[in-house]
Image (tube, rainbow, N blue to C red; front, side, top):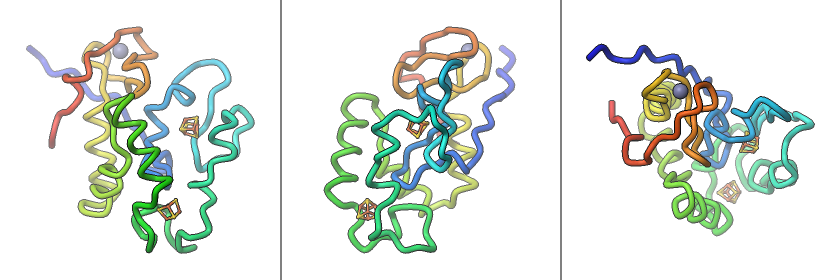
Length: 148
Ligand code: SF4
Ligand code: SF4
Ligand SMILES: [Zn+2]
């Protein structure tokens, strides 16, 4: 069978300081009221993200874009978010952050762009509902990890 050409090209600017990949967020992928990601000030951003205390955390060094550079990493707030995502959505922010630190952002994004791919059309699938917003396919979580 011919491999599905990858059409998922989530840019690194969509990685939030907490380790969330905004490119696979329901808020980013939906057509209406699209949020443009953590690092932008889009008015469609949900309140929970507008008031996010991780994004604006003063403990993170000014030069750093990610929590792994923080002396308190991983702090209780980040652990709580990570636990919620691991439990509800099968994705770990702390794992993401550790991996970015280990292999670099460029390689990490390449891995993400293979991991969250719809097998039917090659577009990104959503971490929250495992749905492809391009073709409507819903994918089983177990099929999501393709190591590189
Ligand atoms: S809703 Fe929050 S997590 Fe989703 S894309 Fe916007 S900032 Fe990122
Ligand atoms: S790990 Fe916690 S304390 Fe450190 S920058 Fe991130 S949110 Fe702030
Ligand atoms: Zn699809």
